[in-house]
Image (tube, rainbow, N blue to C red; front, side, top):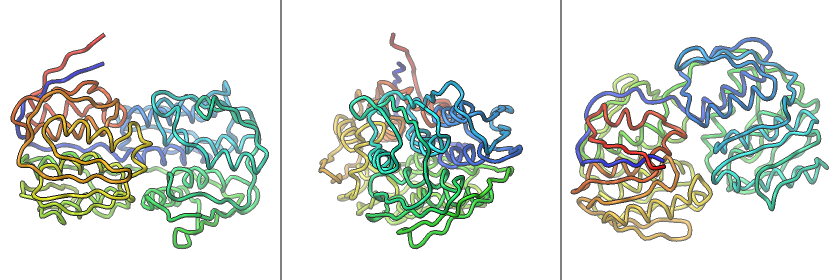
Length: 426
């Protein structure tokens, strides 16, 4: 367990933003389901992405690491459960994407996990298993989950306000089945952009999905994934930390960003602008300028991963910021509404937590002191950004939680001029 002490300072320099974790997961899965060899470039090997790579290896796919950011995948349309066990570690994407794929095998497969992933909701899948008479066992609704049976093509009804990962998981699996299928979304679909990313990567590997206004998705059966080389673009959810730091007074240039990206978290650009911040884009380089931002209303339904760092921005903006439609954040790596409220209030912020929203009354600066990441990578990184506007040093407990998505975050933070002291506890 790593604790760090940050002496408040502004950051300055240029950073290669890690590639999109969402796209890395999807590219690895699609390449794995393709006959032949696919080369994936600019892959960022976070713990979550490594979990997906290992999971595909456990299903009979050959994954070869080629340096720090490339892999070669020799995929197969004939997966097999090697060892009958898949460890998803703490990766919700790995778990929810792989369950339907494993269910196409007709073999017994057990999914394991760690941390809060053990209790992440899987209700939509359990209902499908019951409808299709697929055997499954868990421990009081928690992992490990063992499934045994074969997924069938046909009609699927999925809630849209729990997680888009259920829809994406089915979109990977259903093209492999003999018959045609249709997914009907029974409530308003949140995080539409994540489904867009799935469909876009599927298309890159020759799989077609028809999207009818995000209410219905039709998928023809007997489709073939075709191997393809793929380069992953920079991650706007990670760039968001540096962009918000800039608004608060730092000067960091984010490299490797695509302004044509389908990533939902690209909305960080428009959100900063709506609060009075200024964004400068030069090709694949993006930066924000130090600005006096003002409070606004932010709808979190399409960008839940941005909420921790946007809470920091709201806490240091003029007036009141309200983050709404955020109840799903209670089921992430931590209860993110409770976590970010608790930790920022410890250091002088004024945040009121409601069931599905946050009310943030801005201040000029924060105090500093001791906070905890709640073992959540996005909470840890958001607190690091907050340190740049603290009067006194900030101590972050369990700071190595960043390994989940951004293992070298603290190295980058120091390269940009952050004053960080580290120590390990038992």
